[in-house]
Length: 425
Image 1 (tube, helix red, strand yellow):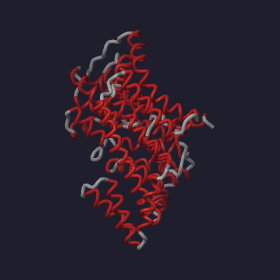
Image 2 (tube, rainbow, N blue to C red):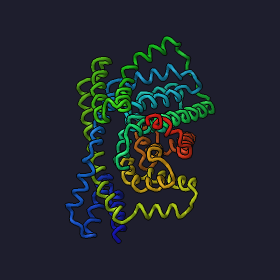
Image 3 (tube, one colour):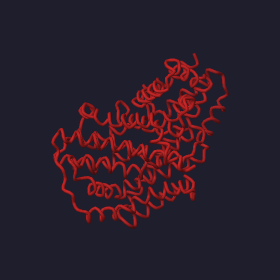
Image 4 (cartoon, one colour):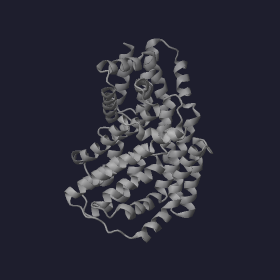
């Protein structure tokens, strides 16, 4: 009965249109009251959920990403990608993918990637004769790179939910899978472009390519400072995030000179709102997870999954399917905090490293950002591209298949995600 109340109140909150954080809090309070537990215990769980030092890095990463979106770094990264890969058939589609790989590795946010690069590339692609649905599909699906390629604040959430994993190992583990996913998407973009007869852009020459690289280098240094600082051991994750934000201010304000005072205020306000949302999710999900543990939900689900099959391949496939379905109806950050304590013991029991599972979780739930009915990136992309969601979803399946292919490779071939972390030991 208590479990029914917990999930019933959560579902009721979502149906009523509550933010996920409020729905989680409502369900947790209902569970505490039903079980007769003192509410101060729930308050303690809320505080303990956000009293984690690693979480201090999240606002810095978010702020750095917003500064770069407002300060012209995205434009220069697009020019670099266009110079490098724009000459292939359907070149702007491939440019879109590789721009996402570069910008996602700096901003760490899929939604920021969709918003910034979509605003630049989608109108250009439409002017060059590309269909609006193709432009939106490429932009939306390639934005997942922002949650896989470091730095990613969602990786920090997973590290906290998993009981304190090494954030630096998680960061470096996402590099190869993120690049692999972008390569698969680039192939899909090329094949669809060939089928639709899209043109190829002229190669601008090696001199233009080098100039584009030099101009984009200060922006690229943001990612090098953040990730390099963590991997070298010189800085903690929080310190590297702070230095990355400072560097982003210097580059956008003094080097590129595109960060106006109004843009800076917009970046600050947006970062504060996003950080507040993330922290509220962490806090209420902590109380919700406490009730899940009280009702032994992780054990029950683990028994259910392992009871359906004892084959590790089948079990991992089932977990991926469950995560894909959940990603369609819930926010990514909330799912990381809820699903990690449920499925992590199962995959560890199968012999999978928690680091590998973290990468799988990022790729899987990242795809949820591109799927209705709760696909934030899909909604943003359709608004920017001025195309109906129904029209986009009808033609997005080749790009979904490309991401799923990369996901299956990372799931069943550990070396994709574990090679680089293994070099750190």
